[in-house]
Length: 180
Image (cartoon, one colour):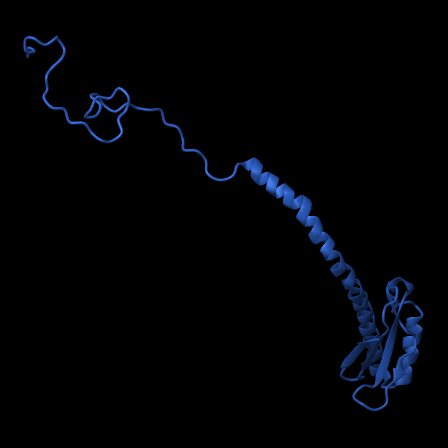
C-alpha cells in the first residue's frame, strides 16, 4: 500500500492512538512489543535462610560459652553422688556377709558355728572393699522379726562415710539396712 501523498515516506496516519496506562518499557511502542518476548538468561532464585558460616558461628559460640556453664553446674551433682556410690559398695559387702552367714547357719542351725566360720573367713579379707569393710563380729538380735545383725565401717578412702547396719532373719533372708 502506498502512503498518501503529502506525507513523508515511512510515516502513516493511523488515526487516534490508544495508550496503555500500565508500565512501559523503554523503546517499546504503545500496544506492546512488535516482536516476540525477549528471552532473558535463567538465574536461580537467591537462597533463603542464613549462610553456612553464620550457622557455624552460632554453634561455635554456644559450644564456647554455654556448654562450660552447664559443665560447671553439673559438678555438684557429680560430687554429691560419690557418697551414695560408695555406700552401694558397703551395701553389696553387707549382702555378701549376710548370705555367707545364712549358708553357714543352714549347715548346723547354730548361730555360734555360723559366727565362728564367719570370723575365720573374714580374716582372709573377703569382706573388705575400697571404701567399706564389714566388721568382724556379727551379733544376735533378741526379739522382733530379725535374728542377727552385721555392720560395716568406712575405710580412710571413704573420707567421712556413714556406718552401715543390717539386721536379717536366718531362714527367710529378709533384711533391713540403715546408714548412720
